[in-house]
Length: 140
Picture (cartoon, rainbow, N blue to C red):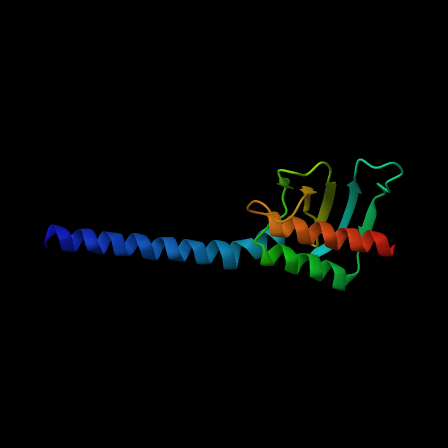
């Protein structure tokens, strides 16, 4: 077999292996790592007088499904993760810490800092998650 042909076969095998690995990680391992969410507790803080920094516990299945769908849409697996969304002209923001308990009993912590609009890799997730959790807090 000629060298170019052998190299082409090796490249094809490597590409197939990478594609298979991506499929396994996204379709098989990710659900095993997370699974359904049993509860979510969170608190938010801002540098404002009398801001309500109470902890809120979410157990409503529809709300948990909404948060899980948001995480999946943005490919965010809440582990012990800190992500920020800070616009260059921002002078304040909202700090959110969420503790996610999965039905398996595993607990993950997600820390987000939102200031400004949709900057960075996780900007869209931070915008939407901060808004969603704030709306739940406001309804309580």
